[in-house]
Amino acid sequence: MAEVEAAIQEMFQAPHIQVMKTSSRLSKIFLTAMVYELYKTGMGETTFEKIATHSCETTLR
Image (tube, rainbow, N blue to C red; front, side, top):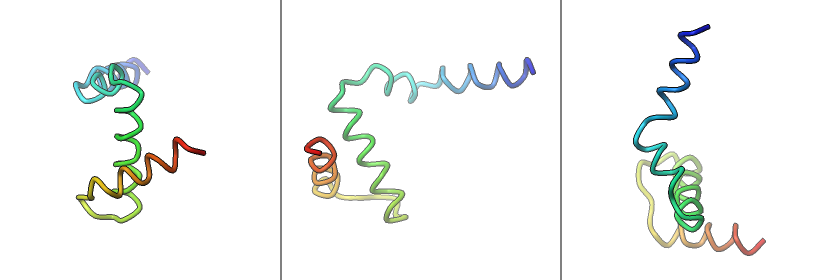
């Protein structure tokens, strides 16, 4: 069980996780929209227009 706890701690200490924790709310919204678009399309890239559209739709609900 200690190995699992160590793995979880290591995961949350990763630099990209730390950046997300300290990001502004708007940055988190854009990151979430980007991940959503990437999963939805299955592509490795997307456009700013698609991210901005999804961000606006999400925040205006």
